[in-house]
Length: 336
Image 1 (cartoon, rainbow, N blue to C red):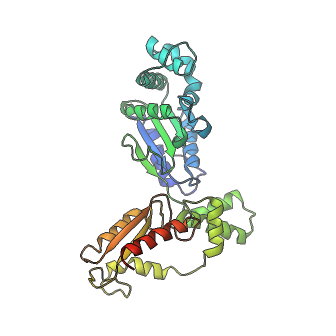
Image 2 (cartoon, one colour; image 1 turned 90 degrees about the vertical axis):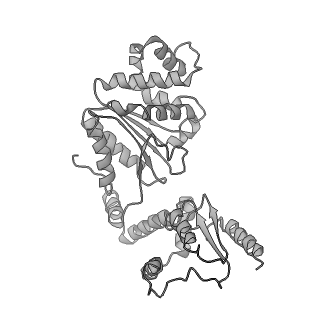
Image 3 (cartoon, rainbow, N blue to C red; image 1 turned 45 degrees about the vertical axis):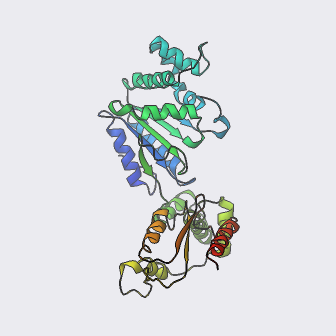
């Protein structure tokens, strides 16, 4: 891989670059998953730049919410640069594909025929040079196009075709085993500072630190909120503090002599309720559920309430009342 201006994504870009370099041997489908603003587009555009540098054909499409109701709108955007070659396909496939775009008078009543025709066109082009298919914001693509993409993802293993799709982490396509998943997390502090310094070198240092702190808070606490609400919460609640107490509490279960260790087998304690945000980046779902299991040796009440679309800010953001009402209902049930 040559030099790249992309900061903090060496491993992720290396993985996609490896898929590009392996196209003469096999094809791959990769799904890039991450929160809005995490850097999916920057990573994919850098991958596209490398592909063009290697002499590959790059076809792109991007999901638009305004076109999500239009069948094959995303596929037409993707294949438009190569549609002139559709005449090289077998007659029924050419008719199916062009009919899906309204370019010939043919009824489209078989989605499989359209998917096969699209795949055949990609394969026909890949004989000239490897083909890289990029589909951004899959969560906003029309369902017909998504079906074609998932169909192709399952068929390109022996082709010189790389399919790179991206979506938010709550999209239905997440977890589809036909794709290799590449999940993006937030940049580390050093990389985040490098990005800011590159794009705004004259920025006042105090403003720079504030922007970085807000971005870190947004990822760790306010990822399920609008940017405006997250920044407002940061302004109101964030206080610089040492991380030692947090790490002591997190490591308590690993040390039998920790002053923060909890007796999870205690039978005499009161009822315990754990709340969990399904989008929590600070205390992920797996950790909270693992915590619940630690209390399995106690017969005292231990319950878990999940708020699927909430992040770590669930008790202080605009949806706090939902959490409070759930907790009060639980306390009432316990006779408290």
